[in-house]
Length: 227
Ligand SMILES: *Cc1c(COP(=O)(O)O)cnc(C)c1O
Image 1 (cartoon, rainbow, N blue to C red):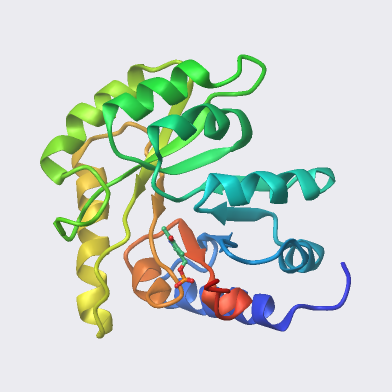
Image 2: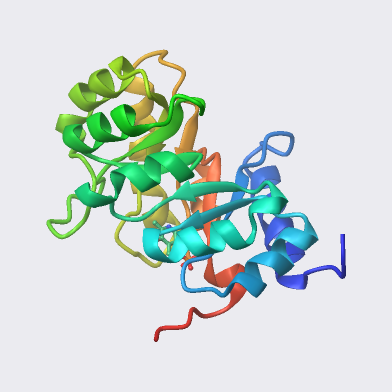
């Protein structure tokens, strides 16, 4: 450990507080540090504080960061849109994928996962707010995609993910997160323990509805470089 990172300890404290408020003090969600458009030095500083899981959205940006920090044994989560021509590198380099949303991508990731690595841990992204522009399988399409992913040897399905449309009140924020949890529960006992939900803007609401992985960027790193 080097000097304490105040943003990191502050976010962890807010997560712990939200978990306690939801009667989950002993099972708080894991913090995924969303490091897109942040420089390697910022990731290194957070890793030095004790953060081990990082989320990246863009493959071209993630690969050099992973190489630069390879000696730190971090875990890497892919949380961006998955383009067909990027599946080989995603399957080779990442530990988790949160944004699986169609059969073809699942089949490619499974076939391309190197045999030397354990099955790629996956979450299926659900378009819970029904926005036309958003990624994610529809709730109606979810059971068939779940069945397919569970049949693929290179993938290990661990849960569901959503990125709902922004709303303002905690009550409104909780609704889509509750829907995702209920969709998961309706699938039956398939070991889908992870619910990846909540960002800087709404992680307290997500924790109240059972989030196990909060994806937080801005609150940890400050604003992103938009260049
Ligand atoms: C960028 C991003 C986040 C983090 O958002 P912040 O508002 O910076 O906390 C979380 N999830 C996904 C899928 C993202 O693309």
